[in-house]
Structures are given as structure tokens and as C-alpha cells.
Image (cartoon, rainbow, N blue to C red; front, top):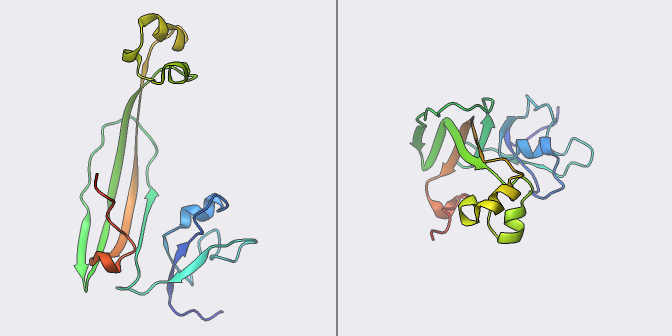
Length: 167
């Protein structure tokens, strides 16, 4: 068995469009050297350019979400997060539920292409009729759930995770 500087590592991809989908799904996740994922360890698969970043508790940072439910149309129930802090590192474990609700119209994008908008309220009734193919709008909704697990340094200047620029 090969020697490693730590018992665990964080999977890192190159982040470009050449990354395999299965490897992109591993990006940012924490793995143990003695329990490889189905994709094997980074760099073991032919042509893999991914790397294994040594994980050191309290120093390393990671964040990932894993899909834990199918998409459905029920109303979401928001879960709370288990957040703890120790030695300047914040640990987050919890569930995130996503819900979307939209009206589907203009299936081939004619309104968007000719009038610069997909909003049916912004065009005449005859244009709506033509661009919707003689039909009408119909609602689309969905919901899915992910498990979130993360560790990040509380001091932003030491962290790889930064607050987005506020507008």
C-alpha cells in the first residue's frame, strides 16, 4: 500500500470542460485513502488530471452537496443546519431543499428571438398565440434535496471561500 501524508484527502478537479462528469461530482468531497470512491482515487483513472489535496482537520477546507431525493412537486420543508465552531474552523452539516415554480411558454423561443422577451405579458395576444404554438402557458414546478457538508476557516483572509461582491 502506498504511503500518504494524511488518512483523508479532498478531491480537486481542474475545473474545466475536460473533467469527466463522475470526477466533477467528486470535486470538493472528502475521501479516505483506505476507502476509494467508485471512480478510484484522483489520478488513477487513465488520463485523469484530478488531484488529491491532503486533508488536515482544522486546516483544510471543503464543501459539497449530494443529491438525496428525487425531484417532485411538493412544497419544501426547510431543515436546520448543524453548525459548530472549533479552533477557528466552522463545520456545517445539514439539508438544503430547492423548489422552483415557473410558467413554460414559447417552446421554440420565438418571442425571445424576435421581441427580446419571453414574457407573454409584454407582447400582443396574437403574438402570444403564435409563439405558444396555439397553446397556452403551463406551470412547471419541482423540488429536490441535497445534503450539505462543509468545513471552512472563519477568518475570511485565510479561507478559500470568499463572500461574493455585493451589488
